[in-house]
Each structure stands twice: as structure tokens, then as C-alpha cells.
Amino acid sequence: MSAALLQVSGLRVNFGHIEAVKGIDLELHEGQITTLVGANGAGKSTTLLALSGLVKKAAGRVMLGSMDLSKMAPHKIVANGVVQVAEGRATLTTLTVQENLELGAYARRDKGNRAADLAHIYSLFPVLKDRANGLAGNLSGGEQQMLAIGRALMAKPRVLMLDEPSMGLAPLIVQDIFRILRDINQAGLTIFLVEQNVRQALKIADRAYVLETGSIVLSGTGRELLVNPKVQEAYLGS
Ligand SMILES: Nc1ncnc2c1ncn2[C@@H]1O[C@H](COP(=O)(O)OP(=O)(O)OP(=O)(O)O)[C@@H](O)[C@H]1O
Ligand SMILES: [Mg+2]
Image (cartoon, rainbow, N blue to C red; front, side, top):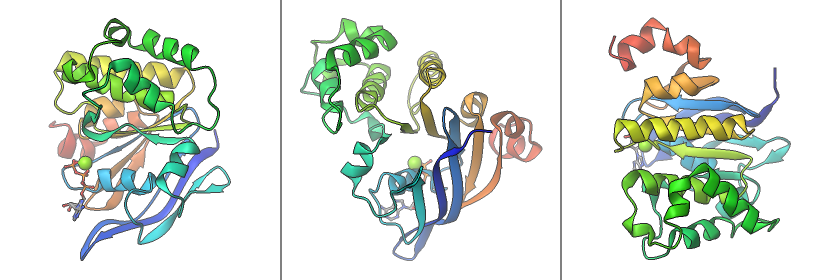
């Protein structure tokens, strides 16, 4: 059993009188894909935003190894290696693909070898290499999602967090995105994946949590939850 790299305990987030996240515990283990699945409005995005320091926590603790991220500013959380892929693919459309990728390295402490890092991203996403000098705004939806992931990877994360990377993409592109996530995980990266595409997410997840109206109601390995009758009935349409 691997040790927990990121440990969340008692996390609560309120928006006014709405209790969006009601005291959840979860852990991400090093080198694993962990997924958080649930319906519309369950609190998935809010959980990610709280881990990134972008919404205020009403309570709870977030530990990265022995480092307490609970009250850390968002840019420091990124600098410490917990990096969320930009939501809605928010690429900078008037910059080139390469400029977008270079911006991803901006928050890094160790500046490393950017040329080698870029080459690595281009090997993961050959389509981005072909479009390196083109404007990000001219990419397709799937390519923009790849760019957003590539940009996050340029920050050299220890934990990569994604909020519904499959949203709005054609099934074949979704397959591509999930395959790439599996590849970068197999290269050692710890991934936290939030998805409404429950079947795909459970298929690639080592560890999975089901969130319902702000509470975790089920957890297990991806495989366990795929065959769980409650999950099948509520989320897999069978
Ligand atoms: N900024 C906000 N202000 C007020 N309420 C919010 C805010 N963001 C989210 N909420 C509410 O918090 C709850 C959880 O929302 P959240 O976006 O985290 O759900 P989600 O699981 O990501 O849903 P989806 O699958 O639709 O993305 C919902 O009731 C939502 O309306
Ligand atoms: Mg959401």
C-alpha cells in the first residue's frame, strides 16, 4: 500500500447558506489516479477549488505529505506542485500554443530545462507540436483541452487535478484524453480527476469516491465501484 500524498480531512465549503461540501475526507496516493464522481451540483468543482485555495474553506485540512496547504495562497499551492488544469480550457486564445505552454512553467520554482519539458509535452501531444506557432484560439475543443493539460504539466506538478476534462468533447477525443491521462499516470504522476463521465473515470481510477450533495457516499477501487449495484443504477444507467 502506498502512502497518501495528499490527505483531505473534514473539508467544508459554504456559499452563504448553501453547504456545498459537508465535511469530506479523501486521500490521493502517490502514483495513482483518484477520481471524484457525482451528479450536477454534487460539489465536485467546489472540492477542487478548495484544494487549489480558490474558494474559502469553512473547515478542514489539506496536507501534501507533511506540508499543510489548508491556508496557503493559490500561487503557493501551485508552486508546491498541486496544479489544477484550467477550467473550461481557459487557454489564452491570442497567444500561440507554445506561448501558452511556456506560461505553464511560470509558477515553477525550479526553472529546469524548458526546451526538454516542451519536447516532452509535444511528444505527449503531437498535434500541439504541429500547431506550436499557431494561435491557441484556432485549436479545436479537444486540442484546447490537450493544451490546457500540457500547460499544467509544464508546471511540473506532483498532483495534477482536472475538472471534467471530457466535457463537451466528441467520444473519440474523450478516448484520447483518457488514454493520455493513463499514460502520464503510468509515467508516475498522481492524478485527481473529477468527472461526470462516471464509467470512463472509474475505468481508469485506482481509487474512487462518489459525492452526493456535498457528502461522500461511497468509495473503493475504480473496479469495485464499476460493479457496485448502487453506482450502476444511479450513474451507469444499468
Ligand atoms: N460561487 C458559488 N456561489 C454560490 N453557490 C455555488 C457557487 N459555486 C457552486 N455553488 C453551489 O454549490 C453546489 C456545488 O456546486 P459544484 O459546482 O461544486 O458542483 P459540481 O459537482 O461541480 O457540479 P457540475 O457537475 O454541474 O459541475 C451547488 O449547489 C452549486 O449551486
Ligand atoms: Mg463542476
